[in-house]
Amino acid sequence: MRVEDITILIGENSVLARKQLKDALISLGAKHFLDASDGQEVIDMYKEHIPDLVFLTLLMPGKDGNAAISEIKADYPDADIVVVSSMGTQTQIKQMLQFGVTDFIQKPFENEQIKAIINARVEGRA
Image 1 (cartoon, rainbow, N blue to C red):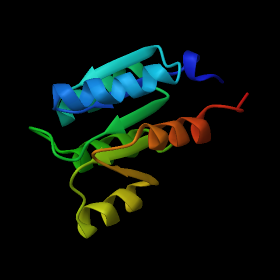
Image 2: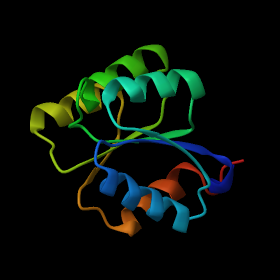
Image 3: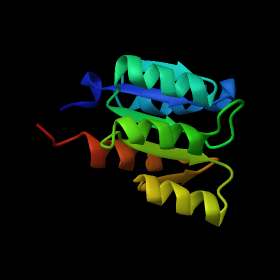
């Protein structure tokens, strides 16, 4: 599997943060994106499109990131979700780990962090 072939869902309420993340992913060759600005929209888009990878913030209007993770993982336990957030309390991080999220990137992120995630998930896999 190549980064050019995967679909990435970006769940982020900030238009600027969403653009920065998308730009970082485009620089790595990503081409297929879905955008969501609140937790319920993330859930709905995931269920409709089943993307290969999700980048998700915790603080969003309506349902927050943890609620979105919980609902997605309940129906799709293999969903690959990376949390990208400026906030991350011990309780929230503990919840994410319980739901099976293994990667947390602190905002502001470095493009190298995104590259490492993509390399671990995509490059080299058949």
